[in-house]
Image 1 (cartoon, one colour):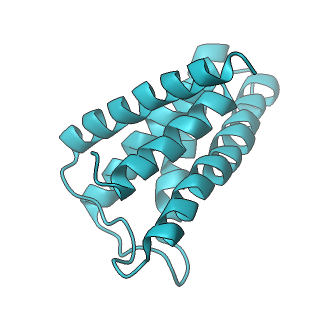
Image 2 (image 1 turned 90 degrees about the horizontal axis):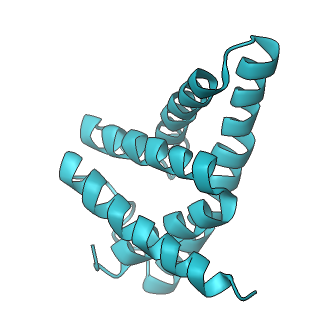
Length: 147
């Protein structure tokens, strides 16, 4: 538990960095229904950090890496790189699926793809906890218009 404040601090730095870098690369994004109230936006932000990182990084990046490295005999670095790219494509694409999916645009797809690459790299180098906190804190910063 004594590392937890440091983890949150590190995650906050990554969240701010993620927002600044990706926002600089892609200027606009569709963030969802404008009619959503603040408590719902906060819950959505926290849930995205926890569940999207579990699905797209822990499960998908790990499974892709395992398949590429163990089954296809791709060396570690290229296997991690390809896993990150494929997972980022899937991560970005899933934001447009279903009744609550956003309308597809190049800028929003590119934003999410780059964010997916950054988060995949963060997961590979720092693990799930830091990545999930960074994602959740980034979403909260956007919700409160701090970025």
